[in-house]
Image 1 (spheres, rainbow, N blue to C red):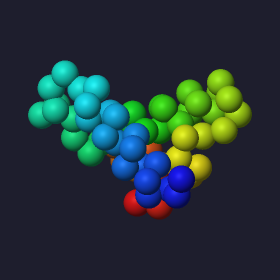
Image 2: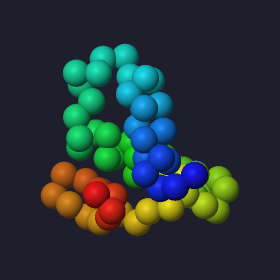
Image 3: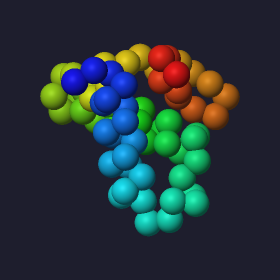
Image 4: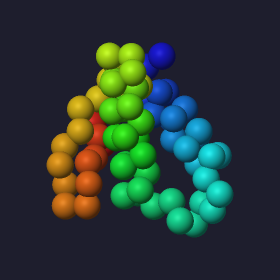
Length: 65
């Protein structure tokens, strides 16, 4: 699965898991992606997205985007 498809799949999963989609903005979505990747790395020694993150003012952002 290519990286774009992985992002699409995980973002759809996160959106479908939200109780209130209006409370899910880009900052929160980026943090969920970061913590999901981090948790996967801790458990399985690999990430979901195979991407690196960069530090921004309001939290981590995938380097690719």
